[in-house]
Figure 1 (cartoon, rainbow, N blue to C red):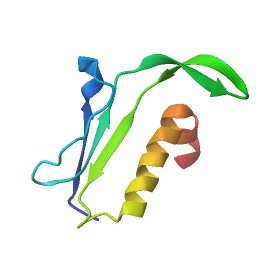
Figure 2 (cartoon, rainbow, N blue to C red):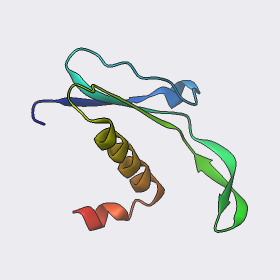
Figure 3 (tube, rainbow, N blue to C red):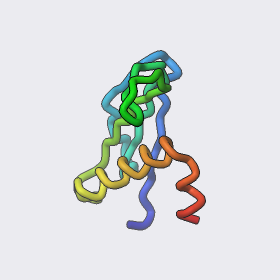
Length: 90
């Protein structure tokens, strides 16, 4: 894909956990990032407090297949969980 625009919107700044981002004309996709909150989370078999956010991705299915959109969202989440992964992608 060439000439597409992907937008990132921060709904978390308003204390919102998540939302459904709506594509604007000319956008291929839009990623909404929710508020970061301390939540009980199972990590390595134990419940620990962790900072958690919600990601929501909307994309134009005329341009992007659902499988690819899902993989992109999973990759973004993986990088946020372990930022060191960016080094291996360089």
